[in-house]
Image 1 (spheres, rainbow, N blue to C red):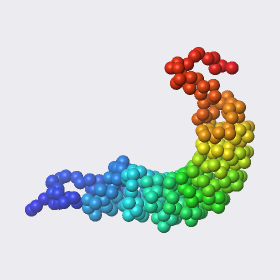
Image 2 (image 1 turned 30 degrees about the vertical axis):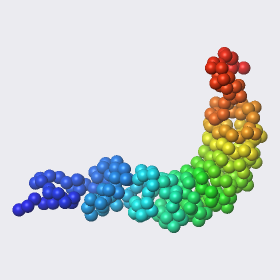
Image 3 (image 1 turned 45 degrees about the vertical axis):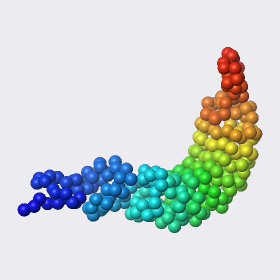
Image 4 (image 1 turned 90 degrees about the horizontal axis):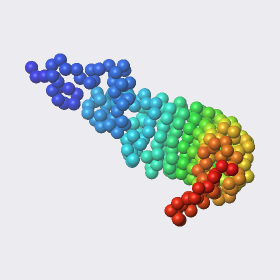
Length: 300
């Protein structure tokens, strides 16, 4: 009598225990497949029908999915297969799909995963207001959202998000250049009490009006990125210093209308600011020019 075959096609030694003989629920799923990178799961599911069933069961129970684990470029078919049975996702990151991800790809995934708390769609320029509407409508527990470099995000899309996401705490709107002060004011008034982190970087349409409204409505704000917001000036920063006692970090590089006196109050509170005081900048420049810096007592 010939030895039995294992699922991969090789001979099985008498008395040997196959991997798939181990309990799936108690051993393989929580202790083995949970440590296998998504890229390897794509290969593993090709071994046999049994392995494919095991991998599918694991994927159906995923709580966190980051497409970067598959690779810098993930095909549409691979994403659809990986997420087709997932119904309990809490975190979803799809930046590597930015070149092709469409509403038709994303909306069904959002509909199956209403427990989502964190979604990263940075650079996904093929999406539209429809996808953001589905996210806001179907995922009421959403806390963190990245829409960086999504040029399609406009004031109307942001209003829908502000109206329907009561748990929102962190929002990245970097380079969403269609957004103007009015949209940010609405966000602040609707969701300001819960916001902890906000990026409005690289948007020349955002000015002091938006920053002042954020300051007055976001008492728990910890991190604010205004990098490259050319219309932001000292008035907005002074209002932040007055109304945001919890602020820990502020990014104002390339905000040419923000003067040092408006930042000094925040510096004294220990807020991390990405631009150095003018005296420090002068010393660095002097050191670069002459090769050394004279001793200067910086304690005033």
